[in-house]
Amino acid sequence: MRLTSFTDYTLRTLLHLGSNPGRLVTIQEIADLHSISKNHLMKVVNELARNGTIETIRGRNGGFRLAHEPKDINIGAIVRMSESDFYMAECFDPNGTPCGLVKACGLKSVLGNATAAYLAELDRHTLASLLPEPRPRDMPVTVHRRKAA
Image 1 (tube, helix red, strand yellow):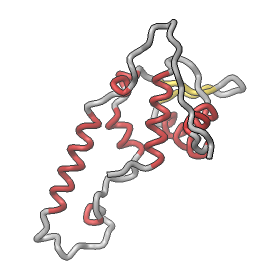
Image 2 (cartoon, one colour; image 1 turned 90 degrees about the horizontal axis):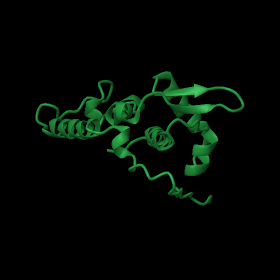
Image 3 (cartoon, helix red, strand yellow; image 1 turned 90 degrees about the vertical axis):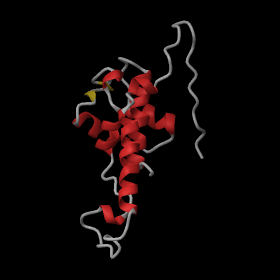
Image 4 (cartoon, one colour; image 1 turned 180 degrees about the vertical axis):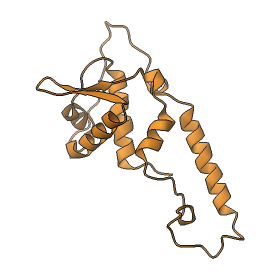
């Protein structure tokens, strides 16, 4: 299974916000950190704000931050929200081409079980469980930036 870039950017955004509690973050900051498109991030931020995961502050000194504690943000729920479907094969798509093997094929149940196990694992984690342990205040945090190509 492969997550879409939308989900990847959603998770990166939440990880960055979780690592910067209470501070307003900008789209430009995340775009620069990960060398990703501001346009794509604007869609991510809009969706996260629309579903109440983040709160946005408009204006010159605006930005966005988590609307909930990291311990209250479930990764499985976020992935389900950001992915359009979990069709592992065309036979999962109700609008897909019918398969001539449907009566004699055990693959659909195996793939269905694999998808369920994948989502169950994500459900076991919160944003807090993915964040590094807090450092003492006197220790600097190192941020690694990728060089632009």
